[in-house]
Each structure stands twice: as C-alpha cells, then as structure tokens.
Length: 233
Image 1 (tube, rainbow, N blue to C red):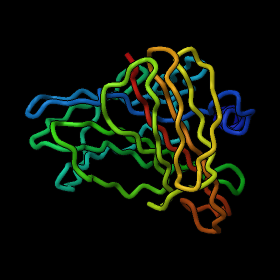
Image 2: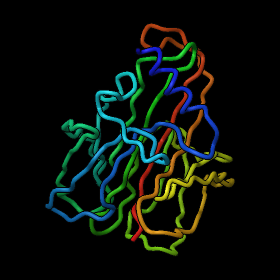
Image 3: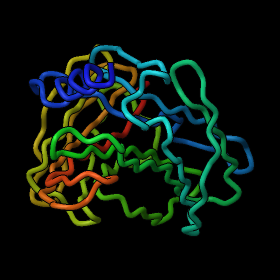
C-alpha cells in the first residue's frame, strides 16, 4: 500500500504542468489585528483539482510538520497545531505591529529511489505598520500581505536560499482550478492580474543535485516545493 501511495504521489509531482502537484499550503487572512487571535489552517493536496487529502493519507510523515512564526522583531516560535479530519489548525496572537511570517519546511522521510522530497509553505500577516521580517527557507515566494481585489496586479518574488531565483517556474492556480505557468525575471519577480475573486495558490519547485544521506538512505537529488496562498475579493 505504501508503494502504491508513493507511485501516485510521484505521478502527481512529475505530471504535466497544466496542474499543480500535491503540495502543503497555509491559509490565513493577510491582515491581522494586534492582540487578537489569528486563525491558521494547513492543508495538503492538489488545489487545482479541488483535492484536499485526509490527514491520515498525507504522504510519508508530512503530517509531522512543524509550524513556525517569525515576529517583526525576528523572534522565531513554534506554534502548536491541532489535527482535524483533513487539515491542521493553529492560532497565534500578534503582540506587536509589523509583518509576521508563518513558515513550514518539512523534509519527508520517504524518498523515491535516489530522490528526496521537501515540502515548504509560508504566509505573511500584516499587523499595522510594515516591517522587514525575514525567514531563511531554502525556497520561498514573497507576496505583500494586503487586501487584494479583482483587477489588481499581483507582484511576487521568488528566492532560493535567500538569493533571487531567476528563471524559476511558478504555477499560479486560480480559484476555478485553472493553472498558468510563469517564469521569474532577472530579479526573481513575476506579476499577473487577478481576473476573478477567490483563493489563489502559487507554487514554485526546484530540484537540487546533492549526494547525501537522507534518513538512512543515499540520495542524489532533493525536490522542493514552496507555496503561498492569497485571497482576492
């Protein structure tokens, strides 16, 4: 059964670019309020197919992920999560003004042949004034946290090991499940216009050639994915 699940996951990861592969993503509102609890949800599935996997079917040990909060003063704290049937929930209370970052970076224990998998996700929450909050993910997509509306132009920047990621392929999955592939420019940027309201998911993937020991198994590649979600009114 584990072998079959792994084959299905790998097929999803390496299938055509008209849809996104299985991914981990964080959902929360982009605007928060000081001293008021902020709700967070974490899902795993294939958003373009409106597929959210039950927690018991998450790939390998992905459900053992850790959720971290980076505050405007650069304090990093692990946030407790609670499992539900098909997602995890969490809350945090922003006690200072600025930009908060929620981040997950989980290396899945189970590799396929010589390829390992690392699932990352992030979300930014703006509380009052902006701050230059940073996080050191191996792969990341940065979008300004604010209220977006239909017709807005979304600007996003992709980084790899905190360096601008040029010519990266980013999948933009719209609320109806249609996916569009965009390439980052020399500054690691992409832009697109919001045509409809609802939830958008952005995903970037990258494969690093690296011979190493991965949870007791020799591998030569690490496949990574990073996601961000934005809501358009």
